[in-house]
Image (cartoon, rainbow, N blue to C red; front, side, top):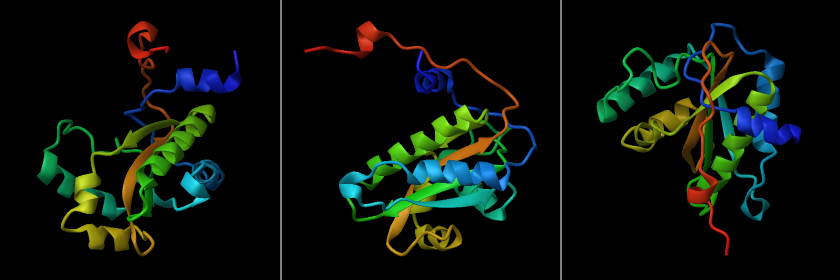
Length: 176
């Protein structure tokens, strides 16, 4: 089987990480994977902010997220204590930014898996980062002017693993 297809089939969301930090080389590789993603009209509008898992801004985001949604997993924060969180932002007025960010974050997730790392894609903080405190968080996360949060991904060394999700070709695919 093709190596890429194997990585896709093996990948699942990781919701538990070791305390081992990612190296600069690992982070750079992940960032490059995100920036290599195709974008609509080759706009290249995706911006990635790399945040250490112990950065206080993550606690602020967590607090605001919990005020909005509660905390369904009180034993964990929204990024499952990962040592690194990447925030993807993009041009607020470009119609395809959310699609482009989705493609970029999937590139990052697949490269993380290929490197033996775990990841979980995060959208639950969108309301916190685009609500009343949008300007504050945009500044703290160093989003370029006119950019907004699109999606995030937590990455680290896996402390737990789970089976990738199953699918039903008969139910999930139509041929016409």
